[in-house]
Amino acid sequence: MRYKYILEKREIDLSGKTVFITGAAGFIGSHLTKALLSLGLTNKIIGIDNMNDYYDVSLKEERLKQIALADKKSRFQFIKGNICDKQLVEDIMKQYHPAVVVNLAAQAGVRYSIDHPDAYIESNIIGFYNILEACRHSQSDSENNVEHLVYASSSSVYGNRLSYPYRTEDGTDCPVSLYAATKKSDEILAYAYAKLYGIPSTGLRFFTVYGPQGRPDMAYYSFADKWKNRETIKIYNYGKCKRDFTYIDDIVNGITAVMQKQPIQNKEGVKYKIYNLGNNHPETLLDFVRILQEELVCAGVLPDDFDFEGHKEYVPMQPGDVEITYADISESEKDFGFTPKTSLQEGIRKFAQWYAGYTDENQKKR
Image 1 (cartoon, rainbow, N blue to C red):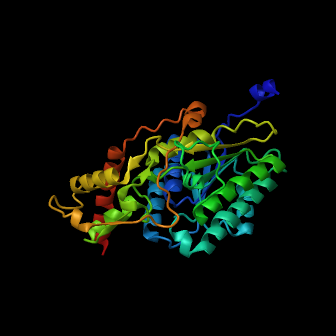
Image 2: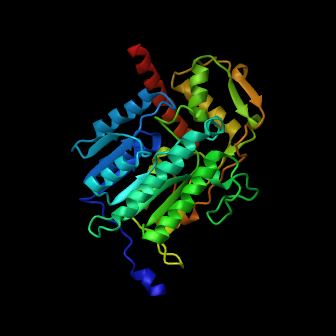
Image 3: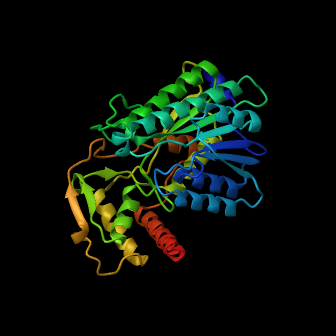
């Protein structure tokens, strides 16, 4: 068995092949698409997104414009659609025969899941099931089968653990939000399909991804919006939370590396693996807020004399939140050379500079 693992073909040469990315107009999906286009790794990229109004659709449209600018050789094709449409997903798979599928489409947000549970069951469970089924049917075609399914999980699956950093071997049976429960369900479903139908699958647990063109519901973006509008921000758990903030470029580098290598078979002969993609360096929420203040002033978003303290409210922990996220990335580093290089100061600076330009441009359009 040991020698079988050594001889196993794992590397995936993407040249001349097609990649299917769900959630392509989303934060991570759009950055991944642009990176693949700039690297010239693939022959074609098919992207799908339902362009829902969970947050301002104009930001998603802006991301698609940036993808179009990066698409020098017309290798990207966008399809507006929902992965909950099973027939649409199957039709895409049959028409384009992607070698690698990257499922990033999901209803995001821990707090939103408390009041809108249906959206999470629909997108994160049913939508992902449709992706798995389409991959399953592709396995019957030996020449056009899916060589690797890569899908987004979340650090939320760890819940409120008392031991740090979080290792992929740690138990994840006690989610504290519906969002986390759906992501854990995705991991279990992917394992079952990998075992039953031979779909090589890798799940990626992301840790607090941030950066330019990020989601407006994320704390750093929301704080910037509120301060710009002279509103007060809420700092939960009185600022005592810690987060393993991971810059978008580092996450994309990790995904790109994972895409090109199938997981090793486990003891049951299943090609399935889960990795953490995080910064391995949690920062306090108060330090994060301090850095954001500095960079928003430097970028000209806010004046030097802005009364930050007068626009802060310290409040208790929100239901569904966790006190700390902290990734053990030793496996990701060993298997893919994954080593985040962007400091929080540098990453927030890049966000603030982008935010200044993006909001100024939007004001000119009004």
